[in-house]
Image (cartoon, rainbow over all chains, first blue to last red; front, side, top):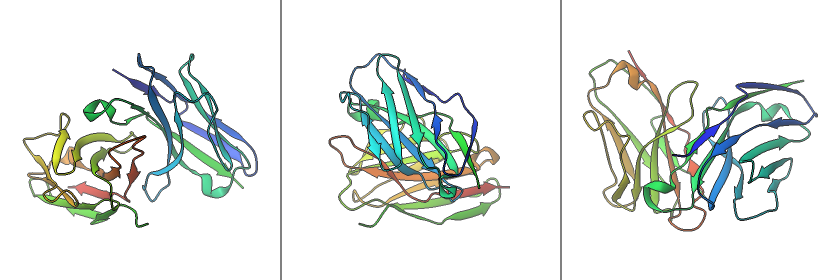
Length: 117
Length: 114
């Protein structure tokens, strides 16, 4: 079974600085997708960025980028120019490319990010 | 494009009472998911629908939880009778049934069982 591990329960960053959140996963599959979701105190899960495993190029979305290391099964999220609004829980998630019940999201336990003014 | 809608946003009930949550997915999304998120943890899938059929309900406590999606659009999740350990946020998500199937989440319903 696939697992997702986020080893940093909490992280802190100064406003305007850069922070990297770590995520590792375990799978025997070669075709899958990886996601980072943000969950602010309002509790709504918001998609931050996604990566298709077959793509070698790392995904970027404005100030958010990932470092996808397929061989190492690592998928870290870098937030540049951190803003107060970035403070939230961040969840890493894995989804198999298979259909049906095998294609469900598997979440890590999350990393709580604080942004200091 | 409207997002996933959920109601109510908050609910407080006593144990052994029943409760129902409603979800309206993004238009055109054939797949709908219900998750349970206990404080301090990541979401856990309860049930997945493809149109009005169940794809996966292996983690749904069927002795007390039920869900339906009768017309392949809106969905209702019910708990009867509720237990203290059901206190959690219940998240609904939807996705297209093909391609990357990125899931988009609603605001969630926070349930407190006393």
